Image 1 (cartoon, rainbow, N blue to C red):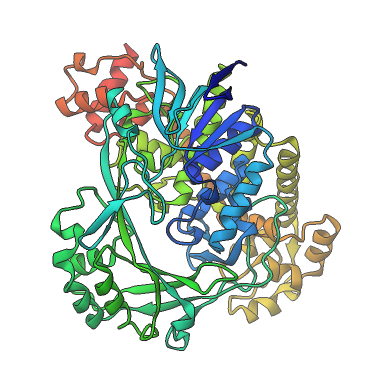
Image 2 (cartoon, rainbow, N blue to C red; image 1 turned 60 degrees about the vertical axis):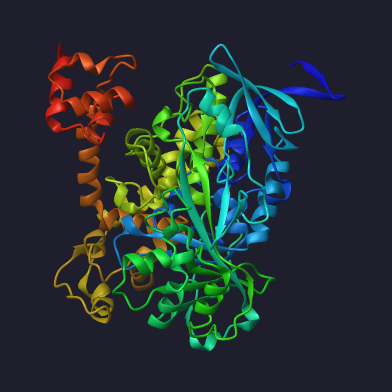
Length: 632
């Protein structure tokens, strides 16, 4: 370790520098530091770490699975979410367990404060408030950064997690000004520096709705959306259980609201062409929804509290970049908003991103060694997607500088694996958002079993502690014991028929295994524990009466055949993932491949036949050619 004197301040050399303290940067810093690296986190504003720039919530469809996976790997997002929750809901309970997704409403201010406190308690994390303007590269590898204050910081690896700040431009009607988000400045120069190094960049757009004063709303005209009666949580650690909750509310737009909004379309930066970047397909602005779905008479609005001790509400579903007077006039036509007072209007933000096909699966760039990109700089949208990338980048940066094997999650391992494989293999031209439909193995990648899937992998690389691994092992030992017992225990008709009648399902006429009765959709393990003394006594004796154990046992028994079939598919297709391709192979030499396949394969440079098969434009016939070539 050496010191450099610059402007009278002694500068340390760090193992890893992380630029940006959003969700990606915070997870990257925590992961690398907890594995033993000395980390410097550089941010433009230390008061806004892990800021919830858009909606004050974590989780949701597929996103909840990602937060659970981050926690299982040893990240902090799940812990912070649990400590700052206002409300918890398990979405999609009416569907199969592969679709169940936890979602939390959070206190926006507390979320950021809690993240900062956790990072400050993390021994190896250091901080510097500044803006990075240049990357120092020598012999094809990154060696440091330069900041606005003229400071040079040296490092062995660098993680860029700049979010929406790279040349960020905020749009409200015909007004536009630079900014990474409302109230924060943009980051300049860095895009040009990366382009000079050979990286290609493009523009993307996202947006956020107006915030309103809850004291001015008439909630009697809205539909209450309470949390779950028995709230769950995200972290597998001993985080606090939610004992009180705040409700969200549901309202609707109308044709009158849409007509008012249309009066501002001629001043909309989206329709006038002032915004060049592509916006999120699955989270469009209200004006985009009206334009694309012109026959729809109304759209849902979710009215979400911003915290325990604030009157501020977030109007989910009313993202807009229309002139503020049009936004205000239209929103006041929504039932319950007739006297609404506004804290600030919605706005759109346009920013630079770098297409992720310029990265390896470790999130290290292909052009510059030891330089990693994580989060919205890669074209994703959402706190959860960003946090997952930050975690993986932090892990791999630590492993790389220690010359250890990179940490790569497969599509069958985690939603995080699906996310990164999609980005690297397919790229993205619009903000990428995770959905359960993107995961072909979603029965295996449930929100309930992330600890079983990922904590052992994390422990192997030195992130998850032995204590956490032991907790997972003990949990699944109990799950296995309970399943074995239910598969052996035979139930007499007299023991169960009363409960079966109450559940309006057929009674039994002879003894049946408890596990086979549990296969019925009307029957739940908690019912059987309450109804059958033998099961109850066994569960009490073996300390099995825990919600997570009961849920896991029930899911495994009810969906055993589906889980088995999906596991067989993983095993079958893993053969393709084991057929590796050389990084430096010139596919233009294989004239039997289609022209498009040669072009795409040379661009992506897939690692395996499996990855090659997922590249758009590479046909099954092209894959056959590659397999034949490998056979030779």
